[in-house]
Image (cartoon, rainbow, N blue to C red):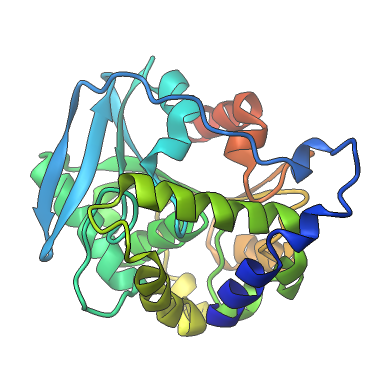
Length: 282
């Protein structure tokens, strides 16, 4: 993934030059709307970091976990809808957004343990989980390591081995735009705004080798999981998504039409319906 990062940053602006005048929805990267007012927000001391979180609404809990280089505020459309019927928890993963980091190497097991500690801090015993990209991977990690804390996992644009990443993402302009936006957001939100490159370097070391779960590990999952992807995902191979759905016992596979890796921004209404249909299923 460090090579992916380098290639994307070098080509980010070049890729826009030949863009078509009329883009399909799955080629766009809409700006998230402002977040609604939180009922509770703050910083939880977990695993040596200060982890930013916010809580909205009332009802059965659902935890939303963003993707790599992102932050909690990308979930604004989901928070607004889900909070009508659920207690919605969002957070910035370690080193992302407003949360701090340490020099400890990044790993999905560590990041999963951060979220368990956050749930403990909020006194939430069990929750549904919606994860996007790295957030989906963290959700699958939790399904293996802490299934007692989960009711269901909606894992969108996740992979379980590094070869699930599509090398075509290296030349994708939508993904390049996301990388550029993430850098700008980091400077606005982070307590260490001048350390974006150091943060990216640190998390890139994780992406080079993780996740790397085998079929035997995946086959032990008992938590109900939806394996979800946009039909034009730039980063995750479709055949990998299909294979994941077959490997995870009882998994549902949901393919969102005319959407990409950034489906929650491109198609919020369809995304929210898919989430609610799954997490509220009896």
